[in-house]
Image (cartoon, rainbow, N blue to C red; front, side, top):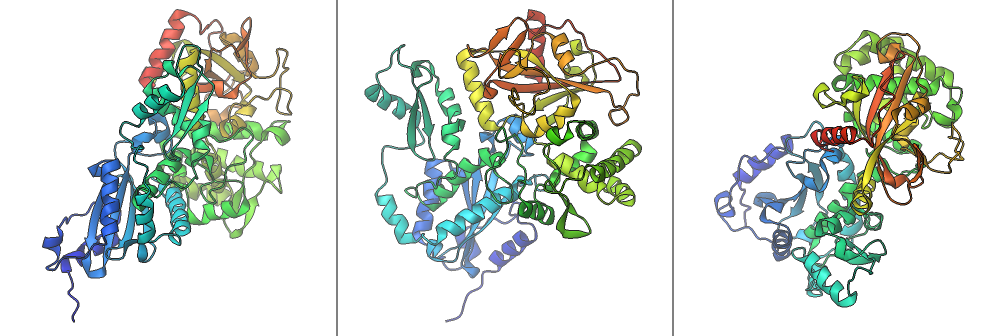
Length: 578
Protein backbone atom coordinates (compact mmCIF):
# COMPACT_ATOMS: atom_id res chain seq x y z
CA UNK A 1 0.00 0.00 0.00
CA UNK A 2 1.50 3.34 -1.07
CA UNK A 3 2.28 6.15 1.38
CA UNK A 4 0.30 9.35 0.83
CA UNK A 5 2.46 12.45 1.24
CA UNK A 6 0.81 15.64 2.50
CA UNK A 7 2.61 18.46 0.66
CA UNK A 8 1.37 21.29 2.89
CA UNK A 9 2.73 19.52 5.97
CA UNK A 10 6.16 19.32 4.39
CA UNK A 11 6.10 23.02 3.48
CA UNK A 12 5.20 24.00 7.02
CA UNK A 13 7.89 21.78 8.52
CA UNK A 14 10.58 23.17 6.20
CA UNK A 15 9.58 26.74 7.18
CA UNK A 16 9.94 25.83 10.85
CA UNK A 17 13.36 24.28 10.34
CA UNK A 18 14.60 27.57 8.88
CA UNK A 19 13.03 29.69 11.63
CA UNK A 20 11.65 27.57 14.48
CA UNK A 21 10.62 30.53 16.63
CA UNK A 22 8.56 32.27 13.93
CA UNK A 23 4.78 31.84 13.99
CA UNK A 24 3.49 29.43 11.38
CA UNK A 25 2.03 31.14 8.34
CA UNK A 26 -0.04 28.09 7.47
CA UNK A 27 -2.73 26.97 9.86
CA UNK A 28 -4.54 24.12 8.18
CA UNK A 29 -7.07 21.78 9.67
CA UNK A 30 -6.57 18.06 9.39
CA UNK A 31 -9.19 17.90 6.66
CA UNK A 32 -7.48 20.69 4.65
CA UNK A 33 -3.95 19.41 5.10
CA UNK A 34 -4.48 15.78 4.17
CA UNK A 35 -7.05 13.84 2.28
CA UNK A 36 -7.16 11.08 4.84
CA UNK A 37 -7.82 11.37 8.54
CA UNK A 38 -4.64 11.35 10.60
CA UNK A 39 -4.52 8.93 13.48
CA UNK A 40 -4.17 10.69 16.82
CA UNK A 41 -3.21 8.64 19.78
CA UNK A 42 -6.16 9.18 22.16
CA UNK A 43 -3.85 9.89 25.12
CA UNK A 44 -2.36 12.85 23.23
CA UNK A 45 -5.83 14.34 22.80
CA UNK A 46 -6.61 13.70 26.46
CA UNK A 47 -3.42 15.42 27.63
CA UNK A 48 -3.99 18.42 25.35
CA UNK A 49 -7.51 18.78 26.69
CA UNK A 50 -6.18 18.60 30.26
CA UNK A 51 -3.92 21.61 29.59
CA UNK A 52 -6.87 23.57 28.20
CA UNK A 53 -9.05 22.63 31.16
CA UNK A 54 -6.51 23.36 33.89
CA UNK A 55 -5.02 26.47 32.24
CA UNK A 56 -6.79 27.95 29.20
CA UNK A 57 -7.41 27.33 25.52
CA UNK A 58 -4.47 29.59 24.65
CA UNK A 59 -2.07 27.64 26.86
CA UNK A 60 -1.51 25.01 24.19
CA UNK A 61 -1.42 24.95 20.40
CA UNK A 62 -0.88 22.04 18.01
CA UNK A 63 0.66 21.64 14.56
CA UNK A 64 0.36 18.27 12.81
CA UNK A 65 2.64 16.74 10.19
CA UNK A 66 0.79 13.65 9.00
CA UNK A 67 3.26 12.65 6.33
CA UNK A 68 6.02 12.21 8.91
CA UNK A 69 3.74 11.07 11.76
CA UNK A 70 4.74 14.15 13.75
CA UNK A 71 3.07 16.78 15.87
CA UNK A 72 4.43 19.95 17.48
CA UNK A 73 2.80 20.81 20.78
CA UNK A 74 3.45 24.36 21.96
CA UNK A 75 2.98 24.90 25.69
CA UNK A 76 2.64 28.62 26.43
CA UNK A 77 3.91 29.61 29.87
CA UNK A 78 2.63 32.94 31.17
CA UNK A 79 5.73 35.13 31.58
CA UNK A 80 3.88 37.33 34.08
CA UNK A 81 4.69 34.81 36.81
CA UNK A 82 7.83 36.97 37.16
CA UNK A 83 7.48 40.54 38.36
CA UNK A 84 8.44 43.37 36.03
CA UNK A 85 11.87 44.08 37.51
CA UNK A 86 12.94 40.42 37.35
CA UNK A 87 11.64 40.08 33.79
CA UNK A 88 13.60 43.17 32.76
CA UNK A 89 16.79 41.95 34.44
CA UNK A 90 16.42 38.54 32.77
CA UNK A 91 15.52 40.06 29.39
CA UNK A 92 12.14 38.37 29.27
CA UNK A 93 9.22 40.03 27.49
CA UNK A 94 6.39 39.76 30.06
CA UNK A 95 3.72 40.58 27.48
CA UNK A 96 4.10 37.32 25.57
CA UNK A 97 4.37 33.69 26.66
CA UNK A 98 7.47 31.58 27.01
CA UNK A 99 6.90 28.83 24.44
CA UNK A 100 7.97 25.24 25.07
CA UNK A 101 7.75 23.38 21.77
CA UNK A 102 7.73 19.59 21.98
CA UNK A 103 7.80 17.33 18.90
CA UNK A 104 6.04 13.97 19.38
CA UNK A 105 4.93 11.05 17.28
CA UNK A 106 1.32 11.79 16.31
CA UNK A 107 0.19 8.18 16.38
CA UNK A 108 2.38 6.77 19.17
CA UNK A 109 2.74 9.76 21.51
CA UNK A 110 4.43 8.50 24.70
CA UNK A 111 5.18 5.10 23.17
CA UNK A 112 7.18 6.74 20.39
CA UNK A 113 10.64 8.35 20.38
CA UNK A 114 11.55 10.93 23.01
CA UNK A 115 10.42 14.41 22.00
CA UNK A 116 12.79 17.19 21.06
CA UNK A 117 12.35 20.46 22.95
CA UNK A 118 12.77 24.13 22.04
CA UNK A 119 12.22 27.15 24.30
CA UNK A 120 11.73 30.65 22.91
CA UNK A 121 9.74 33.84 22.92
CA UNK A 122 8.43 34.65 19.42
CA UNK A 123 9.56 38.30 19.30
CA UNK A 124 12.53 37.98 21.65
CA UNK A 125 14.87 35.67 19.76
CA UNK A 126 18.01 37.81 20.12
CA UNK A 127 17.86 38.61 23.86
CA UNK A 128 16.15 35.51 25.25
CA UNK A 129 19.35 33.81 26.35
CA UNK A 130 17.56 32.29 29.35
CA UNK A 131 15.81 30.07 26.84
CA UNK A 132 19.05 28.08 26.52
CA UNK A 133 19.15 27.46 30.25
CA UNK A 134 15.50 26.41 30.41
CA UNK A 135 15.88 24.24 27.31
CA UNK A 136 18.79 22.39 28.92
CA UNK A 137 16.76 21.90 32.10
CA UNK A 138 13.75 20.50 30.24
CA UNK A 139 15.91 18.30 28.03
CA UNK A 140 17.42 16.66 31.12
CA UNK A 141 13.97 16.35 32.69
CA UNK A 142 12.57 14.67 29.56
CA UNK A 143 15.46 12.24 29.26
CA UNK A 144 15.02 11.26 32.92
CA UNK A 145 11.26 10.85 32.80
CA UNK A 146 10.85 9.35 29.34
CA UNK A 147 12.11 5.90 30.26
CA UNK A 148 9.31 5.60 32.82
CA UNK A 149 6.57 6.91 30.54
CA UNK A 150 4.03 4.92 28.54
CA UNK A 151 0.53 5.75 27.42
CA UNK A 152 -0.78 2.93 29.60
CA UNK A 153 1.07 4.28 32.63
CA UNK A 154 -0.59 7.67 32.21
CA UNK A 155 -4.05 6.14 31.98
CA UNK A 156 -3.53 4.27 35.24
CA UNK A 157 -2.34 7.39 37.04
CA UNK A 158 -5.24 9.48 35.74
CA UNK A 159 -7.72 6.99 37.12
CA UNK A 160 -6.26 7.70 40.56
CA UNK A 161 -6.76 11.44 40.15
CA UNK A 162 -7.71 13.29 43.30
CA UNK A 163 -10.91 15.05 42.43
CA UNK A 164 -10.72 17.71 45.13
CA UNK A 165 -7.64 19.51 43.77
CA UNK A 166 -8.29 22.01 40.98
CA UNK A 167 -6.42 25.27 40.18
CA UNK A 168 -9.71 27.18 39.92
CA UNK A 169 -11.05 27.75 43.38
CA UNK A 170 -8.10 26.10 45.09
CA UNK A 171 -7.55 28.95 47.53
CA UNK A 172 -11.23 28.90 48.52
CA UNK A 173 -11.03 25.15 49.10
CA UNK A 174 -7.88 25.51 51.18
CA UNK A 175 -9.55 28.22 53.27
CA UNK A 176 -12.65 26.10 53.71
CA UNK A 177 -10.61 23.11 54.81
CA UNK A 178 -8.55 25.26 57.14
CA UNK A 179 -11.73 26.51 58.79
CA UNK A 180 -12.49 22.89 59.64
CA UNK A 181 -8.95 21.79 60.52
CA UNK A 182 -7.69 24.96 62.20
CA UNK A 183 -10.43 27.24 63.60
CA UNK A 184 -9.14 30.76 63.07
CA UNK A 185 -9.05 33.51 65.63
CA UNK A 186 -6.98 36.60 66.29
CA UNK A 187 -4.87 34.42 68.59
CA UNK A 188 -4.09 31.83 65.91
CA UNK A 189 -0.75 32.66 64.28
CA UNK A 190 -0.82 30.70 61.04
CA UNK A 191 0.32 31.34 57.48
CA UNK A 192 -0.38 28.75 54.83
CA UNK A 193 2.36 28.09 52.30
CA UNK A 194 0.63 26.46 49.34
CA UNK A 195 2.84 24.62 46.89
CA UNK A 196 0.62 23.95 43.88
CA UNK A 197 3.32 22.01 42.12
CA UNK A 198 4.09 19.72 45.01
CA UNK A 199 0.35 19.70 45.82
CA UNK A 200 0.87 20.03 49.52
CA UNK A 201 0.06 22.49 52.26
CA UNK A 202 2.80 23.55 54.67
CA UNK A 203 1.72 25.30 57.85
CA UNK A 204 4.17 27.70 59.47
CA UNK A 205 3.82 29.93 62.51
CA UNK A 206 4.01 33.51 61.21
CA UNK A 207 0.77 35.44 61.55
CA UNK A 208 -2.96 34.94 61.80
CA UNK A 209 -4.22 33.66 58.45
CA UNK A 210 -7.35 35.68 59.05
CA UNK A 211 -5.15 38.71 58.35
CA UNK A 212 -3.56 37.26 55.19
CA UNK A 213 -5.17 38.03 51.84
CA UNK A 214 -5.50 35.61 48.93
CA UNK A 215 -2.86 37.61 47.05
CA UNK A 216 -0.45 37.20 49.95
CA UNK A 217 -1.05 33.46 49.97
CA UNK A 218 -0.09 33.33 46.30
CA UNK A 219 2.99 35.47 46.94
CA UNK A 220 4.07 33.00 49.59
CA UNK A 221 4.46 30.40 46.84
CA UNK A 222 7.87 31.99 46.32
CA UNK A 223 8.87 31.55 49.95
CA UNK A 224 11.73 29.30 51.01
CA UNK A 225 9.37 26.38 51.57
CA UNK A 226 7.93 26.49 48.05
CA UNK A 227 11.26 27.23 46.37
CA UNK A 228 12.76 24.19 48.05
CA UNK A 229 10.55 21.96 45.90
CA UNK A 230 11.42 23.54 42.55
CA UNK A 231 13.12 20.34 41.32
CA UNK A 232 10.39 18.04 42.60
CA UNK A 233 8.76 16.08 39.78
CA UNK A 234 5.11 17.14 39.52
CA UNK A 235 2.40 14.51 39.52
CA UNK A 236 1.34 12.76 36.29
CA UNK A 237 -2.29 12.61 37.33
CA UNK A 238 -3.24 15.31 34.79
CA UNK A 239 -1.08 13.94 32.02
CA UNK A 240 2.44 14.46 30.71
CA UNK A 241 1.86 17.89 29.13
CA UNK A 242 0.52 19.33 32.39
CA UNK A 243 3.50 17.78 34.17
CA UNK A 244 5.88 19.62 31.80
CA UNK A 245 3.94 22.89 32.28
CA UNK A 246 4.14 22.63 36.05
CA UNK A 247 7.79 21.67 36.10
CA UNK A 248 8.62 24.68 33.90
CA UNK A 249 6.57 26.95 36.18
CA UNK A 250 8.47 25.63 39.18
CA UNK A 251 11.88 26.16 37.60
CA UNK A 252 11.48 29.54 35.89
CA UNK A 253 11.30 31.68 39.07
CA UNK A 254 14.40 29.93 40.45
CA UNK A 255 16.68 29.98 37.39
CA UNK A 256 18.95 32.41 39.25
CA UNK A 257 19.56 29.87 42.03
CA UNK A 258 21.19 27.33 39.73
CA UNK A 259 24.19 27.33 37.40
CA UNK A 260 23.13 27.99 33.81
CA UNK A 261 25.28 25.06 32.65
CA UNK A 262 25.25 22.24 35.24
CA UNK A 263 21.97 23.17 36.97
CA UNK A 264 23.50 22.72 40.43
CA UNK A 265 22.92 25.24 43.20
CA UNK A 266 25.33 28.14 43.38
CA UNK A 267 27.74 28.00 46.28
CA UNK A 268 27.71 31.64 47.35
CA UNK A 269 28.19 33.06 50.82
CA UNK A 270 24.84 34.83 50.92
CA UNK A 271 22.86 32.49 48.70
CA UNK A 272 21.45 33.29 45.25
CA UNK A 273 21.43 36.71 43.63
CA UNK A 274 19.06 38.20 41.08
CA UNK A 275 20.61 37.31 37.73
CA UNK A 276 21.28 33.76 36.50
CA UNK A 277 24.97 33.00 36.11
CA UNK A 278 27.52 30.26 35.55
CA UNK A 279 29.00 28.65 38.65
CA UNK A 280 32.72 28.56 39.49
CA UNK A 281 33.24 24.93 38.45
CA UNK A 282 35.85 24.88 35.70
CA UNK A 283 33.90 22.55 33.39
CA UNK A 284 30.94 24.92 33.55
CA UNK A 285 33.16 27.92 32.79
CA UNK A 286 34.50 26.15 29.68
CA UNK A 287 30.98 25.21 28.57
CA UNK A 288 29.80 28.75 29.22
CA UNK A 289 32.54 30.05 26.92
CA UNK A 290 32.16 27.36 24.26
CA UNK A 291 28.38 27.27 24.03
CA UNK A 292 27.85 31.00 24.52
CA UNK A 293 25.25 30.46 27.23
CA UNK A 294 24.01 33.84 28.51
CA UNK A 295 26.38 35.58 26.07
CA UNK A 296 23.77 38.29 25.55
CA UNK A 297 25.05 39.97 28.72
CA UNK A 298 27.92 41.48 26.73
CA UNK A 299 25.47 43.56 24.69
CA UNK A 300 25.51 45.94 27.64
CA UNK A 301 28.90 47.16 26.42
CA UNK A 302 27.02 49.18 23.82
CA UNK A 303 23.66 49.76 25.50
CA UNK A 304 24.65 50.79 29.02
CA UNK A 305 27.96 52.62 28.75
CA UNK A 306 27.75 54.37 32.13
CA UNK A 307 26.79 51.18 33.94
CA UNK A 308 29.64 49.31 32.24
CA UNK A 309 32.14 52.01 33.22
CA UNK A 310 30.88 51.91 36.81
CA UNK A 311 31.34 48.12 36.99
CA UNK A 312 34.86 48.43 35.59
CA UNK A 313 35.69 51.21 38.07
CA UNK A 314 34.44 49.08 40.96
CA UNK A 315 36.55 46.17 39.73
CA UNK A 316 39.60 48.44 39.57
CA UNK A 317 39.02 49.75 43.11
CA UNK A 318 38.80 46.21 44.51
CA UNK A 319 41.86 45.06 42.59
CA UNK A 320 43.96 48.00 43.79
CA UNK A 321 42.88 47.69 47.41
CA UNK A 322 45.34 46.56 50.05
CA UNK A 323 42.56 44.13 51.07
CA UNK A 324 42.19 42.64 47.58
CA UNK A 325 43.03 39.16 48.84
CA UNK A 326 39.79 39.31 50.87
CA UNK A 327 37.38 41.59 49.00
CA UNK A 328 38.21 40.85 45.35
CA UNK A 329 35.66 38.08 45.40
CA UNK A 330 34.78 36.45 43.10
CA UNK A 331 38.08 36.26 41.28
CA UNK A 332 37.63 35.97 37.47
CA UNK A 333 37.35 32.66 35.64
CA UNK A 334 38.30 33.50 32.06
CA UNK A 335 39.01 31.04 29.25
CA UNK A 336 42.22 31.60 27.27
CA UNK A 337 41.13 32.82 23.79
CA UNK A 338 44.17 31.09 22.23
CA UNK A 339 43.63 27.79 24.03
CA UNK A 340 39.97 27.16 24.96
CA UNK A 341 41.05 24.13 27.03
CA UNK A 342 42.71 26.19 29.77
CA UNK A 343 41.80 29.14 31.97
CA UNK A 344 43.81 32.32 31.53
CA UNK A 345 42.44 33.62 34.83
CA UNK A 346 41.46 31.14 37.53
CA UNK A 347 40.56 31.46 41.24
CA UNK A 348 42.90 28.50 41.84
CA UNK A 349 45.88 30.35 40.33
CA UNK A 350 45.48 34.02 41.16
CA UNK A 351 47.72 36.52 39.40
CA UNK A 352 46.79 40.04 40.41
CA UNK A 353 49.57 41.59 38.31
CA UNK A 354 48.40 39.94 35.07
CA UNK A 355 44.83 40.80 35.94
CA UNK A 356 45.79 44.44 36.50
CA UNK A 357 47.54 44.54 33.10
CA UNK A 358 44.41 43.27 31.33
CA UNK A 359 42.20 45.67 33.27
CA UNK A 360 44.48 48.61 32.34
CA UNK A 361 43.87 47.75 28.68
CA UNK A 362 40.12 47.69 29.30
CA UNK A 363 40.35 51.11 30.95
CA UNK A 364 42.44 52.54 28.11
CA UNK A 365 40.05 51.47 25.35
CA UNK A 366 36.92 52.36 27.31
CA UNK A 367 38.26 55.89 27.74
CA UNK A 368 39.02 56.21 24.05
CA UNK A 369 36.20 54.31 22.31
CA UNK A 370 32.45 54.21 22.66
CA UNK A 371 30.37 52.26 20.17
CA UNK A 372 29.46 48.74 19.06
CA UNK A 373 31.11 46.10 21.20
CA UNK A 374 32.52 44.45 18.07
CA UNK A 375 34.63 47.56 17.47
CA UNK A 376 35.62 47.79 21.13
CA UNK A 377 36.65 44.13 21.07
CA UNK A 378 38.80 44.71 18.01
CA UNK A 379 40.64 47.56 19.71
CA UNK A 380 41.15 45.63 22.94
CA UNK A 381 42.43 42.53 21.14
CA UNK A 382 45.17 44.62 19.55
CA UNK A 383 46.48 45.71 22.94
CA UNK A 384 45.83 42.65 25.14
CA UNK A 385 43.97 39.47 24.08
CA UNK A 386 42.74 39.01 27.67
CA UNK A 387 41.23 42.50 27.96
CA UNK A 388 37.95 41.83 26.20
CA UNK A 389 37.37 38.41 27.83
CA UNK A 390 37.91 40.14 31.19
CA UNK A 391 35.36 42.81 30.28
CA UNK A 392 32.90 40.06 29.34
CA UNK A 393 33.45 38.44 32.73
CA UNK A 394 32.93 41.75 34.59
CA UNK A 395 29.54 42.13 32.88
CA UNK A 396 28.40 38.50 33.02
CA UNK A 397 29.42 38.04 36.67
CA UNK A 398 27.43 41.07 37.83
CA UNK A 399 24.38 39.46 39.37
CA UNK A 400 22.56 42.68 40.29
CA UNK A 401 20.21 44.68 38.11
CA UNK A 402 21.57 48.19 37.61
CA UNK A 403 19.82 50.76 35.43
CA UNK A 404 20.67 54.44 35.08
CA UNK A 405 17.74 56.57 36.18
CA UNK A 406 16.74 59.28 33.71
CA UNK A 407 17.04 62.85 34.95
CA UNK A 408 13.28 63.29 35.44
CA UNK A 409 13.12 60.22 37.73
CA UNK A 410 16.02 61.07 39.99
CA UNK A 411 16.01 62.07 43.64
CA UNK A 412 17.04 65.70 43.32
CA UNK A 413 18.00 66.06 46.98
CA UNK A 414 20.86 63.55 46.46
CA UNK A 415 22.75 66.12 44.32
CA UNK A 416 24.39 63.76 41.86
CA UNK A 417 23.51 62.94 38.24
CA UNK A 418 24.82 59.40 38.73
CA UNK A 419 21.74 57.70 40.14
CA UNK A 420 20.90 54.07 39.47
CA UNK A 421 18.09 51.66 40.17
CA UNK A 422 19.75 48.78 42.03
CA UNK A 423 18.02 45.46 42.67
CA UNK A 424 20.18 42.61 43.88
CA UNK A 425 17.81 40.31 45.77
CA UNK A 426 16.51 37.16 44.05
CA UNK A 427 12.75 36.71 43.42
CA UNK A 428 12.39 34.49 46.49
CA UNK A 429 13.98 37.09 48.78
CA UNK A 430 11.91 39.89 47.28
CA UNK A 431 8.72 37.88 47.84
CA UNK A 432 9.67 37.24 51.46
CA UNK A 433 10.48 40.93 51.85
CA UNK A 434 7.13 42.00 50.42
CA UNK A 435 5.28 39.66 52.76
CA UNK A 436 7.26 40.91 55.77
CA UNK A 437 6.52 44.49 54.73
CA UNK A 438 2.78 43.79 54.82
CA UNK A 439 3.15 42.35 58.31
CA UNK A 440 5.49 44.94 59.82
CA UNK A 441 5.81 47.90 57.45
CA UNK A 442 9.03 49.36 56.07
CA UNK A 443 11.03 52.55 55.78
CA UNK A 444 14.16 53.78 54.00
CA UNK A 445 17.72 54.17 55.19
CA UNK A 446 21.18 54.65 53.68
CA UNK A 447 23.98 52.11 53.59
CA UNK A 448 27.49 53.41 53.00
CA UNK A 449 30.36 51.20 51.93
CA UNK A 450 33.73 52.01 50.40
CA UNK A 451 33.93 51.80 46.60
CA UNK A 452 36.33 48.84 46.84
CA UNK A 453 33.57 46.72 48.44
CA UNK A 454 30.99 47.16 45.70
CA UNK A 455 32.63 44.70 43.29
CA UNK A 456 31.74 41.98 45.80
CA UNK A 457 28.40 43.45 46.93
CA UNK A 458 27.00 43.39 43.38
CA UNK A 459 27.92 39.71 43.05
CA UNK A 460 27.39 38.35 46.56
CA UNK A 461 24.73 40.65 47.95
CA UNK A 462 24.58 43.04 50.88
CA UNK A 463 25.74 40.67 53.60
CA UNK A 464 26.02 40.75 57.35
CA UNK A 465 29.82 41.13 57.57
CA UNK A 466 30.03 41.77 61.29
CA UNK A 467 32.79 39.77 63.02
CA UNK A 468 33.97 38.31 59.69
CA UNK A 469 37.11 38.94 57.63
CA UNK A 470 35.00 41.21 55.38
CA UNK A 471 34.30 43.69 58.17
CA UNK A 472 36.03 47.02 57.55
CA UNK A 473 34.53 49.17 60.32
CA UNK A 474 33.75 48.14 63.87
CA UNK A 475 30.51 46.52 65.01
CA UNK A 476 29.93 48.61 68.10
CA UNK A 477 26.20 47.94 68.14
CA UNK A 478 26.27 44.22 67.43
CA UNK A 479 26.05 41.93 64.45
CA UNK A 480 24.02 43.00 61.42
CA UNK A 481 23.78 45.24 58.37
CA UNK A 482 24.45 48.83 59.41
CA UNK A 483 22.12 51.53 58.11
CA UNK A 484 21.23 55.11 58.91
CA UNK A 485 18.35 57.44 58.06
CA UNK A 486 20.88 60.32 58.06
CA UNK A 487 22.91 60.76 54.87
CA UNK A 488 26.02 62.22 56.57
CA UNK A 489 26.57 59.02 58.60
CA UNK A 490 26.45 56.77 55.53
CA UNK A 491 28.64 59.20 53.56
CA UNK A 492 31.26 58.66 56.25
CA UNK A 493 31.17 54.88 55.80
CA UNK A 494 31.52 55.31 52.03
CA UNK A 495 34.93 56.95 52.46
CA UNK A 496 33.80 60.19 50.88
CA UNK A 497 36.33 63.01 50.95
CA UNK A 498 37.16 66.17 49.09
CA UNK A 499 39.87 65.54 46.53
CA UNK A 500 39.92 67.33 43.17
CA UNK A 501 39.93 65.27 40.01
CA UNK A 502 38.44 64.75 36.59
CA UNK A 503 34.86 64.00 35.65
CA UNK A 504 34.63 60.45 34.26
CA UNK A 505 34.31 57.20 36.17
CA UNK A 506 37.25 55.56 34.42
CA UNK A 507 39.53 58.58 34.78
CA UNK A 508 38.56 59.22 38.37
CA UNK A 509 40.06 57.28 41.27
CA UNK A 510 37.98 59.10 43.87
CA UNK A 511 34.55 57.48 43.57
CA UNK A 512 32.15 56.98 46.44
CA UNK A 513 28.88 55.08 46.55
CA UNK A 514 26.01 54.92 48.96
CA UNK A 515 22.88 52.83 48.61
CA UNK A 516 19.35 53.73 49.60
CA UNK A 517 17.75 50.63 51.04
CA UNK A 518 14.28 49.64 52.10
CA UNK A 519 14.27 48.01 55.52
CA UNK A 520 11.54 46.16 57.42
CA UNK A 521 10.49 47.98 60.59
CA UNK A 522 10.00 44.90 62.76
CA UNK A 523 11.15 44.53 66.35
CA UNK A 524 14.34 42.92 65.00
CA UNK A 525 15.53 46.29 63.65
CA UNK A 526 17.74 47.72 66.38
CA UNK A 527 17.88 51.51 66.52
CA UNK A 528 20.73 53.20 68.37
CA UNK A 529 19.93 56.82 67.69
CA UNK A 530 20.68 57.38 64.00
CA UNK A 531 22.62 54.14 63.65
CA UNK A 532 20.41 51.19 62.83
CA UNK A 533 21.42 47.52 62.81
CA UNK A 534 19.39 44.89 60.98
CA UNK A 535 20.55 41.35 61.84
CA UNK A 536 18.24 39.73 59.25
CA UNK A 537 19.60 40.01 55.69
CA UNK A 538 16.17 39.26 54.20
CA UNK A 539 14.84 42.43 55.83
CA UNK A 540 17.09 44.76 53.80
CA UNK A 541 16.69 45.30 50.04
CA UNK A 542 18.72 47.75 47.97
CA UNK A 543 16.64 50.15 45.89
CA UNK A 544 18.99 52.88 44.61
CA UNK A 545 22.72 53.49 44.22
CA UNK A 546 24.21 57.00 44.20
CA UNK A 547 27.72 57.61 42.90
CA UNK A 548 29.80 60.69 43.73
CA UNK A 549 33.09 61.56 42.05
CA UNK A 550 36.01 63.93 42.42
CA UNK A 551 35.17 65.19 45.87
CA UNK A 552 31.54 65.78 44.96
CA UNK A 553 29.47 65.80 48.16
CA UNK A 554 25.78 65.20 48.63
CA UNK A 555 23.53 66.97 51.10
CA UNK A 556 24.66 65.72 54.51
CA UNK A 557 21.40 66.78 56.16
CA UNK A 558 19.06 64.35 54.39
CA UNK A 559 16.82 62.45 56.80
CA UNK A 560 14.72 59.69 55.23
CA UNK A 561 12.24 59.94 58.11
CA UNK A 562 11.17 63.43 57.11
CA UNK A 563 7.75 63.37 55.45
CA UNK A 564 8.94 65.36 52.41
CA UNK A 565 11.92 63.08 51.77
CA UNK A 566 9.91 59.92 52.35
CA UNK A 567 7.21 61.12 49.96
CA UNK A 568 9.71 61.91 47.19
CA UNK A 569 11.36 58.49 47.55
CA UNK A 570 7.97 56.79 47.18
CA UNK A 571 7.19 58.89 44.10
CA UNK A 572 10.44 57.90 42.38
CA UNK A 573 9.91 54.25 43.28
CA UNK A 574 6.41 54.40 41.80
CA UNK A 575 7.72 55.98 38.59
CA UNK A 576 10.46 53.35 38.38
CA UNK A 577 7.79 50.65 39.01
CA UNK A 578 9.75 48.94 41.76
